Length: 326
Image: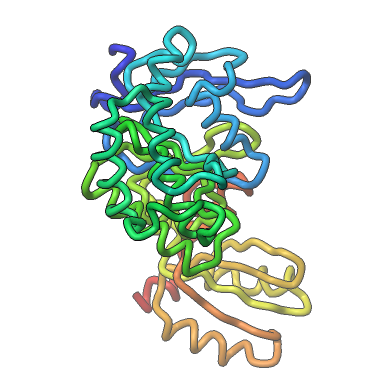
């Protein structure tokens, strides 16, 4: 297999093998393995301090790995960092914009840093301002823009030189919900029109549901990968959450009907494969034994919690009651 080929045999935009970063005694990223095919939207997920940003910084040549190797757009991050930088765009957690310049000037400056001809800078800048809904702001000073507009301009700036790979490191951090949704609309259009490989890091896990694949990083290691809807589907039809004064006793009593559970303080959680009618009947049966009972569809947050607990696949027996009510 060539260095430019991923484990699937398809040409890769990113390949990392044993990528490791130490800061003294602290192991920030531990033997990181990753293959991202060209054109894929990949989400790198994990808690704060898990190693997401450090991994992105190594892949984008901002920091040098302690050991291991990676190739981005076919270029070695160790031996050809300048070529890697020319092939990528990076949107950092902290804005890279000059707030004293206008929108158009920020894009022009980004183009000049990438040695683009002036005619191409003008054409590319106009295209991106239109794509991100910023055409009417081109002569405004960045300091006068809203947070959402600044973030959209940050992404446009990262795309000025038409990179093969775009790294988005927590692109919506600090934004309110309407602005977060607006950024995701822009990213959806970007992917549809430009087919850029996008690598996203975020701790807003609901934002990663539209990724083609996601990987969960914890304590510096990539511990699980998969397609979001498939990972969510492994959790069953419902997550059942029951508040009870004696959670351990309740978990034992319901084991034969709901399977194994997890307990956090007074909350007992089950993964359930049956239908809601069975749960409604169970709720009525339990009555005053419980303080509250609710059920909902699982999501990536539930996958994330399972990964943090070190669980792999489903656990516990499928109950007869569950099977009958399917």
